[in-house]
Amino acid sequence: MALKTTCQECGGVIEVPDDVIIGEIVSCPDCGIDYEVSQINNGSIQLKIAEDIGEDWGE
Image 1 (cartoon, helix red, strand yellow):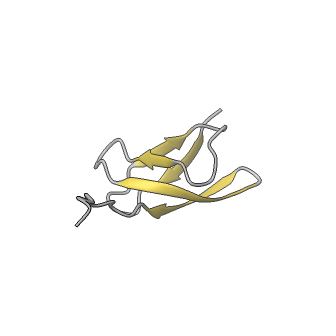
Image 2 (cartoon, one colour):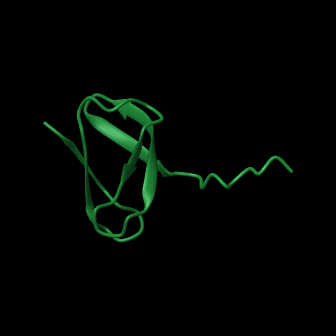
């Protein structure tokens, strides 16, 4: 059974697989924003907006 939470940006419903691990990235199906799983406690889940990783061209 998937865990459900609400997108902080658009209010859409994000379904997170119950076998998700901390640090995994999930996306809102409505607006596409990426979230990182920051905490899992007894069936509830906390997400934080994932940081964008820029290109590193070795400069």
